[in-house]
Amino acid sequence: MLKKFLGVLIVVMFMNSAICAAAELIIFHTNDMHARIQSTDDRGKSIGLAEMSAAVKEVKSKNPATLWLDAGDTFHGMPLITVSKGENLVPILNAAGIDAMTAGNHDFNYGSIHLEKLAKKLKFPLLDANVVRKSDGKTIFKPYKIFKLNGIKVGVFGLSTPETAFKTNPNNVKTIEFKNPVEVSKEMIKQLRPKCDVLIAIMHMGLDASSEFTSERIARETKGIDLIVDGHSHTALAEGIRIGETLIVQTGNYEHYLGRATIKVENHKIISKKAELLDAEDVKNIAPVPDKKILTALSAANVKANNLLDEVVAHSDKHLSSYRLLVRRNESELGNLAADSMRWAAKSDIAVINGGGIREDLPEGDVKKRDTTAIFPFGNTLRVAEIKGATIREMLEHSVEYYPASFGGFLNVSGMTFSYDPTQPAKNRVKEILIGGNPLDEDKIYTIALFDFQTYGGDDYTMLTGLKIVGELGTCDEILADYLNQVGMKGYEVGRITRLKEVPIPDEKDN
Image (cartoon, rainbow, N blue to C red):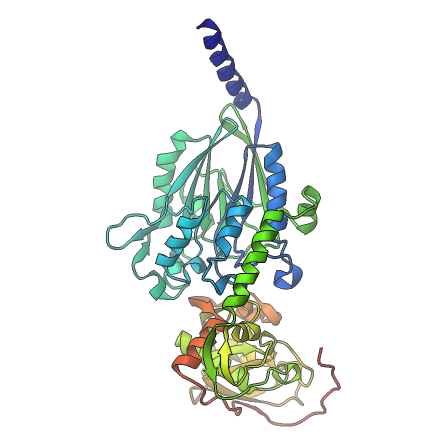
């Protein structure tokens, strides 16, 4: 009996000494993958889930006090995953070793009920404390989890941005509501802080000044969160930012970085915190060989996706060309059709689409899923924004700035017409602009449908980065298929853009 007592005493003393001595808690984090999970994604800029998983597992093997948290917008984006409505991603995430995640607005793109089904298949919790059913006010996901890691108690709770109500199709979230994240955070802090040495919030909230609720606001208006693992604004925070005692971290997007936060705990109290971003080379230095389980799961997902991509999703009355030197220089029938589908889905005043975003022809006859995803291979989502008339003019000037040279940012338009003179200096070429048949009012606020790519300043559309986003829908390949099925092909003929004078066309190669 005495020996047994002494044995228990020694174990307790060892555990206490471990926590009394400085212990290191490591938090790996990701956000806004948007289904970019292969190292070939985003033109090779993505690190790859197999590569990141190998690195995290290597660190976990040496330090059990290690977590991997994901801040959402994970299940939607690339055809490999969207073709199965996120189902293909579940076994991949389960094999990766993620410990918890929260839901981003695009994770609701298949509907909240479908997201619940996906969450039940995960081997780790999807945490969301502020998403509740309208019918009974109960949370639809687990609000929090407490991890016990090498003597450290770590509380983790999740939050989704209330912007999800309009930054996915409203029909996707009509049975749920998003409670005030500041107030919910206060409730979580009150409940978890006394039980935990470290309190972490994983939230899809972001840092955009246009957002009512940001991670910065939550940190400022609450007290007790040690670390916020953030997403939504696609902000790369090299060393994180500090608001009071709270450290906010975010990796940007598309797996360009793997985040790592290191928290030192001594005698149940935090003595230091730091954050850093690891690039592909840093990840490879930790684990030179990608995770074989993930590679196997990716291979299976690709096989399944290829089968699903053969599904006929629409019908086309005519073959429409995506010839590179056509769509990057001139108005095209395919560009007009795509822009019309975007304006139709968004119910906006106008829509624009860049020629560089159109990559394959639309075939005549049966249109398969692989055809629509080949036309729009980048997983761009459709956004609806408010835009001032003067900004529309500035946008169109940039569209024709480089003509007659080909330019990936050359815009096809819907809901408007305009003329331009390529013999005039750049920034002073656009002449008459009509919106819905009426002259452009430069002081008026219009609504515009466009790729998320442009709202991030893609193709140097810097004038579009500050637009107020008032809606966010699905991927452009899905929208085109819906349009063909419900509206069909009509009115896509060229004639919306008038070139007032001709200039010599340079000899460019189609590559």
